[in-house]
Length: 301
Image (cartoon, rainbow, N blue to C red; front, side):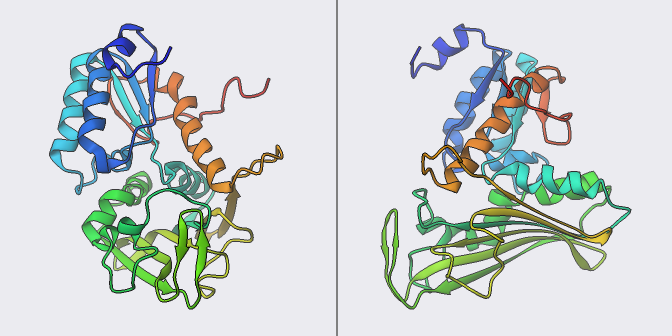
């Protein structure tokens, strides 16, 4: 069945809605669709509204949070957002590894990606492909924290601390040569790599860091962090013991599909595989901290 009607889908009385809608740029439409399912008593597992990864994030506007809270109460349903950045690489991975430590001095979750084949939006949002004087939306600290930083206070909460502050950094790298991308050519003199961090400050030091390095070409910004291969997600914990973990998503079926596509597939499947566990939880907001181990029932076949 293919339809654009929310009412027709609700009439099917599904166990849950796996929602892969657009980003928070289209918050009103996401809220309209998701609220309708929740009010009908249908749980929602979504990747769309990254700020909802941690709904208690103070930067989340009330008119983005309150309608979902009310819809959950009205329908007795639950709403889980895993994020599109992808959330699990920035919360599930570091939190799991922290559980192996006796002391954590700092934890850093890094996304280290080559955007050469990426066809998503990054010009106005990140300034990639723009002149270095261009001010992208995500360079604004409050917007960056709201859009990408929800896992920072989530990790702090899980670790039993209250952060004193959340800060950000933003760096740009200008290419000296033209660079071909899936979207065209980035001309010499324009930004071809960005690096930002969102930092949770506690007792006067940065203890939780979310870092993104997005490049056009593996040779871009050579002095910035890189993985042992292209397109990896990395966790670094300084503590006792110190731990480093690097995760890569790949297709090995000969299809030639890009690692970024594999990462997007994993993001979607995290939401889908969580459905039966979200179904078992009480009504209301659900975060990664509320879920048990999600082992992927039925994936071996």
